[in-house]
Amino acid sequence: MPMYSNRAKLMDDDCSLLLWYKSRVQLNQYDENQNPQGICNLGVAENHLCEEELIAKMRSVSSWSGQFNYYPDPSGEFPFRQRLCAFFNETFCSKQTTLDPARMLISSGVSGTIALLSVLIADAGDVFLIASPYYTAFDFDVAAMARNSLIKCPLLNQDIGEFSLSVEIFKQGYENAVAQNLRPRAIVLVNPHNPLGDIYDEVVMQPILEFAAEKRLHVIVDEIYALSVFQNQRPFKSILNYTSLPDPERTHFLWSFSKDFALSGTRVGVLYAGTKDICRVGAKLNFLMVPSSAIQMTLKLILDDCEWTNAYLKLNQCRLTEQYQYAKTQIEQMDKRIRIRDAQAGLFLWIDFRSILTKVTFEEEHKLFDEFFNHGIYITNGLAIGCSEPGWFRMIFTVKNKWIQEGIERMKQALNTYKLSSS
Ligand SMILES: Cc1ncc(COP(=O)(O)O)c(C=O)c1O
Image 1 (cartoon, protein in one colour):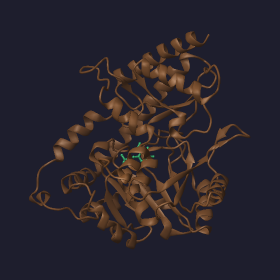
Image 2 (image 1 turned 180 degrees about the vertical axis):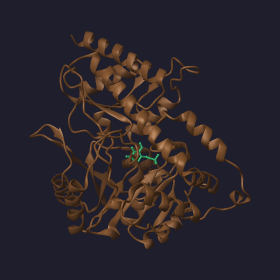
Image 3 (image 1 turned 60 degrees about the vertical axis):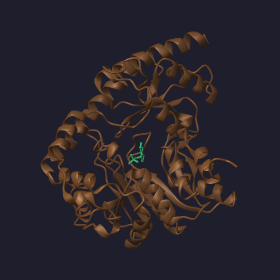
Image 4 (image 1 turned 90 degrees about the vertical axis):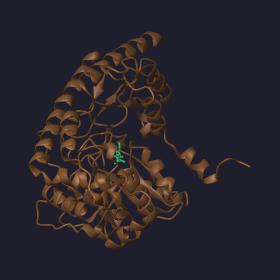
C-alpha cells in the first residue's frame, strides 16, 4: 500500500524546476556575513533593495489587537479590502472608477489566488493559454487543486527574431489546444511581463481581450509588477483603468505585496474578480488559505500612511532603475557578445548568451547553467521558464550590493571556465 495518494503523487510530479531549485538554493543561500560560500541566489524574484526602510516601517506599525486572536473573514478583512480598493483607485485609476470590495478576495499570494481562481473558473482537465517564456511555477499553481494545465504560446516571432505579444499567438495556442481535444478556459496575461520586463499597452491588449470574449474565455491579468516600473518609462496602465472591457465579467485582476512592496514573506495576494459571485463562492474555499487578520491589518496601516507609501514606491523605483543599469552594464562588459534585452520594469535581466554557446541547443544551455551552478550562482535558464529558443537566461538583480557583486564575479569565472572547456 503506497504511503500517499495518487493525487499527492501527481502533485509531487507537477512541481516545476523553478520550485525545485528554489528550495534547494534556500538551504544554502549566500549571505555576505553568515554564509559567504553559499549559493548566490539570482534566480528567485525577490527584492531586497529597500529592506531596511521596510523593516523599520513594519516594526513601527505592528501591534497586537484582540481581534487578531480570532478567525479572519474568509474573503479577507473588510477594512483591508476597502483600503486596497482606495489604493488601487488612487494608484491605477485616472478616471473616477470606484472599485467594490465585494469583488475582492485576499488570499495566499498570487500563487494561492490563481490556484483558487482556477478552481472557480475551470473544470479538471481544462487548459489556460499563456505567453511563453513565463513564470513556470504557475504550472503547479493551476494544477495543485484544480488539475488544470497551461498551453504555451511562444512570444518569439521567428520572422523578426523578437519576443512580441500579439493576439495571433493566442489564436494559434487555442487551435493547438482544440486539436488535442483540450478545452481552453482562460488566457493568462502577465503585465509587466516576467521574464521580459515588457509593459503592454492597451493597443496590444485590446485584440487579445476581444479574442477571449469571442471565445468566451476568462482573462486572468497578473499585474504583480505594476509598480516596479523603472524611471522615465511610459506610465503603466492597469486593466482596472481600461475604459471598456469586451467581457468584464470574465476579466480578473491579480496583484500581491510580494514584488512592488517586496514583502513576499507576508503571502498576501489580491483577486479583483469580474463578478461578486465568483468572490462569494471563492470565499468558501479561501477559508483554507486566507492570510491572518494580523498581517492584513498591518498592511492596511502601511497603506493608510499614503505619504510613506508614495515615498517608498518612488524610492523603490529609483533603486530598481539604478541597480538594473548597474547589473546590465557589468554583464555586457564581461563579453561584448552578451546581449541583454532592454526592460521597462521588473526585477530581472533577460540575457542572451546564444553567441557564447558552442552550439545553440538546450543541451548546451544546460551545460552553461551547470557551470554557473558549480561556480555558486543560481540563475534561471530559458528552458526552465518555457522559452522556445535556447541560450536565454533570467537573472534577478534586486539583491544587496555585495550579493550582486559576488554573483557577477562568479558569473565571469563560470563563463571563463565554460569557454576554456569548449575551446
Ligand atoms: C508573474 C508572477 N506571478 C506570480 C508570482 C508569485 O507571487 P506571490 O508571491 O504573490 O505568490 C510571481 C513570483 O515570482 C511572478 O513572477
